[in-house]
Image (cartoon, rainbow over all chains, first blue to last red):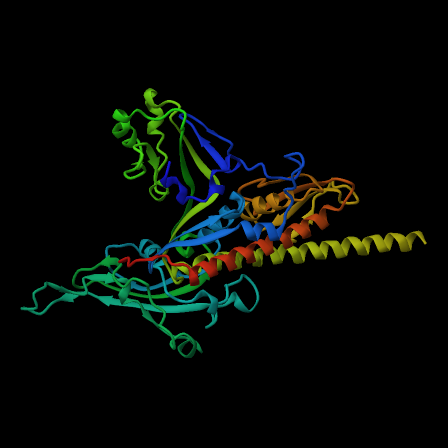
Length: 361
Length: 111
């Protein structure tokens, strides 16, 4: 098994493995809690955690990122994934004031389509609208205004096309700066849809659309239009372990290799089969090999319980590499809010104790 | 109407010394519930910890903590919150280090 060495030795620690069998999985949950193993201390230790933790960016484009998060519990990885989808704020169109709409698409359907258009405005520069207080009414700190005014007409003869403005696209949204917005937001890229070519409606001569659109800050848990990601997902690192005591017969090697993704099973220098760790990353762990009785016991399929392969596609104002830091910041804000509440509770409890003592004295 | 819902409150039935208590955390979900449960279970003084989302249309979670040695579950909760915050900071640092110094594949994706 020459080429398996590209995975660190610690990846072969059986305690980190989830078993994948033909019809069931095994050892799904972590057992590394205090009191589970005699004479082992599994209490929280920041030092040990940070030595163990590995975060490694694998691929980055202007729209997506793939990174490995190794050495954390599923609850933590899942928290970051959930926050990226549902609690990292963005700006999206929420109120649509229709002055005129003679197109075939209904006001409410068009309004819904407008809401889903991703905008490039930086959410950090905006406040949330609240039911009460200063942000209960629209102002330049909590609302972006766009105007959509399109009228379709016949093209003059000889222009090569029949109509002018027969397609209303996201590029037709015109930003109307309010208050100090021109100075604050106009300095960078002006607020606009991230994609100018989204078709919102189609018109014919004589039809027109005239609307005012108010975009506000929100989070994905209220409506998916505020989600900054198209997808944010993780999977566990696959692990395929050959059994040295039961090698695959040489004449069946091709059939064995066909049970896995291309390149996973390789021929070592000594003529023995080996697993290529690089290709194994992408294997879907399809369990195809377990359907063949002739390969029973030759191989074990596993996944590594604390090795998360994240894939995140950004669709909004955040560059893909800023999404995890944004999620971590949201998580820390939530923790701080609960901590403040817990400290207030503690202070209340102490005060109540003091009252009782004074009453007794 | 507009009654202010506390972020955190102790549900009735808790031990007077808070050595066993159920907390109601408002406006939180599995995201915080499961992470906090995991961090509390990492505490050797915690006898039991579990969380639940009692009803999908009620915007809160319940977190049950039972302690050994008559210790205060509120102290354990505060400790767990601080530990989780340290964890978050560590993950972010490691991520930023990788982003700025690792050699990773960069590619161009058309929208």
